[in-house]
Length: 286
Image (cartoon, helix red, strand yellow):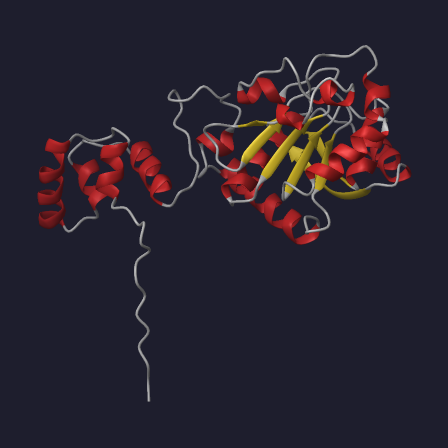
């Protein structure tokens, strides 16, 4: 005896043509010629539209990502930094590497009891913020409620990448001048929020070692599934190892043709001595 299981379409499934109309990629009077070409050529709707020169491959990709509720931005159509390759080029080789890192972190680190991870490197210009921001994007695309904390109070960068207000932020909260309502959702990227660094304080190291930072991280760990902490340069600023210890673990970023192996080894020793676990390393080639 055999049984046949019928798979019904999801109730809110939308047709590709309707999505293209919603996004302004096609006009209503273009639908019928596309359907005709689809019948005659035996092509999918999107391919038929491309064959008529009515749609580009990038536009088709945009519509398909929208159909599957996958956050995706078109270059020139948004205000976010072009460095957010995971948002603008989700099918690129760069982003495939980021997804591979995401998979390893989900297996090796992020659990209900472990939500935070510090992103560290030896010096400025290694690409910590680039990696932090793009990892945040790929985790949010997976549906994980993701928070990025800019704990580089000396030279913050995350608010610039996401074009967010930085008049108040982490430094304001640690100084008792603001609450966690200073966390800002990224409007164009669902499931992603950023706590910017805030005004630069005269004592960044002292602010970050206060117990209030640990308490803040514990509170946020009950609200977010994934938290990445962007940190200052590890061999320049003493608070980096403390931030890694507060998070419990660290992901090291090295810049190709720039980061010295001896410096990387020194940073690893500093991180381990602080009591944090080294989860892995990322070689930034860009």
